[in-house]
Image 1 (spheres, rainbow, N blue to C red):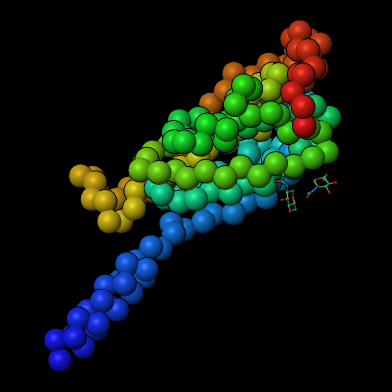
Image 2 (cartoon, rainbow, N blue to C red):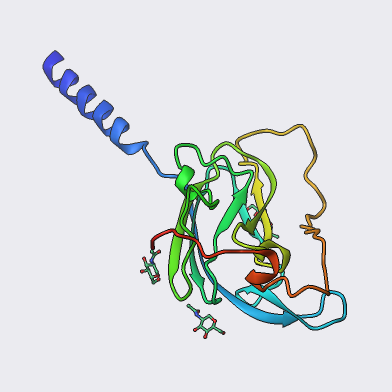
Length: 188
Ligand SMILES: *[C@@H]1O[C@H](CO)[C@@H](O)[C@H](O)[C@H]1NC(C)=O
Ligand SMILES: *[C@@H]1O[C@H](CO)[C@@H](O)[C@H](O)[C@H]1NC(C)=O
Ligand SMILES: *[C@@H]1O[C@H](CO)[C@@H](O)[C@H](O)[C@H]1NC(C)=O
């Protein structure tokens, strides 16, 4: 009898150990980076769009979500995005700055994969190549608190993401020559 009980307990604890290892939820996105024309100051200008949006899409995530973003670079220059403020623990090659990541070459795609681990707040993403950040390709990245983590505030009535940026109408700031940009020696 004791032997049977022991076997039952062993099976139960083994099952418990295998059963509780659930993965955190995933959010999947496909982004298409293109040029487009918008008039932020009333003058039509070339800007960088993501999925035809300027600014780019908001990412609405919850802490510990795994975020997977397949980015297609359809502009004619190398392009790279950074996720400003996301800690990228043991994951620095997803940080999207030159030196940790090669830029995404024109006509190709790259899939970012990172976890917004134990972070809460309003962040943003932007391109780190050339002066791309001055002409678009940026947007909000929100990390909501998981329900199981109590916060000492009432729920907000509503949430808005506001993106602020300097804007210029004069220089052709999409032109690499205008800002002394030289081709990168990074291999694809
Ligand atoms: C991206 O947008 C361009 C221009 O609209 C289109 O030609 C291309 O097929 C799109 N690529 C993807 C992967 O959606
Ligand atoms: C963002 O996600 C949170 C948590 O899932 C949800 O409560 C909220 O309505 C979402 N907000 C938007 C603007 O989609
Ligand atoms: C490029 O996109 C294709 C189609 O979605 C995908 O299968 C592939 O894994 C992506 N490549 C990279 C390097 O992310």
